[in-house]
Image 1 (cartoon, helix red, strand yellow):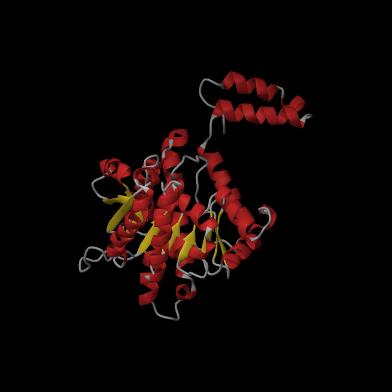
Image 2 (cartoon, helix red, strand yellow):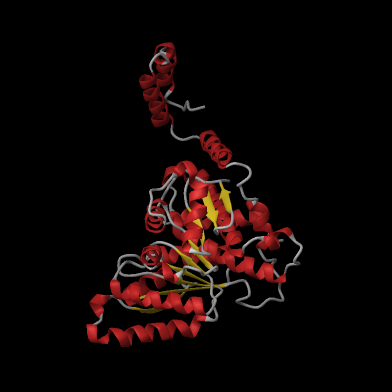
Length: 378
């Protein structure tokens, strides 16, 4: 019910004129808008929209997200040592954008990864360090303004050599949050992607990383450990580049399948009202939970979440019996399903508490409780 204290007179007026308003759809729409404006956004409305979203996705495509979360989340074991629960690295962060790499990296830790690194520009490093002492920050990336043309080859070599020293230690890279579009910086990241692929390290690509790979699809084409997480605009660019057509929301599942096939072997997580996931062989939907509040930074949380769950899924499948149902599923698909579901649950929980004032930091603080609700540590 939308009626709230102090607004009874407004709603009484609306109720008395109900029979007149129903005669005009335009008036009815204005009435509904006024009710929403005066009454706010209720928990019942939130629940109803969540149920509608889930129903729209189709039961055949809806992933069994909670059971997947339970299956791939490792047990806490006192015999394990630091690093076995995941070592994640974020490649991103420049002068303008310091929040995005922090959100991705700290989300990985909040979910349960043991170590989280950030490789960023020197200008961004001190800022990101000030956000949290938990992150390992490497101020090695450079932008064009700080490098002379004649020095670019040597600087690029040094950047790549520094990242390579750490590469084999990482269970997953997240490339793109807060990266920016400086040409020299993107050239360096292009080489990092090539070396990550040669080292068989899984890569989650988001934000400006998607800008880079959309223009250079060969960086990820044919690499089964690559995950792309586009939003609506990034997805549009990919569809136009690969399929040479417009986005078709009426046949979204088939178009996503065609896009993943067209790029070759990659997994795509298309963010939206329902998150759609495809590796070119299958399509899955994650519609549970969610929030109507679309504050910036949720994509960064998602990229860090997918990185952790992708690394956990690979660990789980390497130890699982071959006849288990989950052992038949691509680990990138499992990581995307789990990361999407947890992010959406955390956003839902944060919205219950903060409503319109929900921020990315509020969602991050709900990640741990959201995972605990689904998969208790003890």
